Image (cartoon, rainbow, N blue to C red; front, side, top):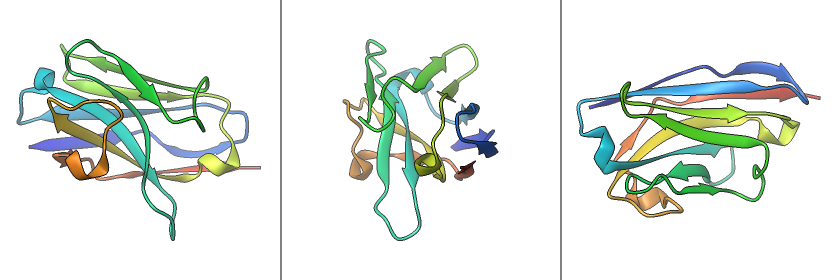
Length: 123
């Protein structure tokens, strides 16, 4: 089982980044997928998720209107498009999967985690 992330990096405030996550080794369509982020010294935060059943989405208030989650069942992939980035979006972002999960995704329900990718937004 793997969630392999790509994307991320350094961007100026106001810019955009797209995170990608490729899933393998499990039945992708049975999993609610999502993204968490963590800043050193702070608790991990659920950023967004999309349910397995009807594609319903959840966004944290801090990213609503700026981030968009999507999934591609044919490619077993999930994406997070991040626009209008702010310095406070700086964090390590993790792709996640939760079997038959509801929204919002709870950290304790996550079955699989990606390796994490750094996003840094400069002011």
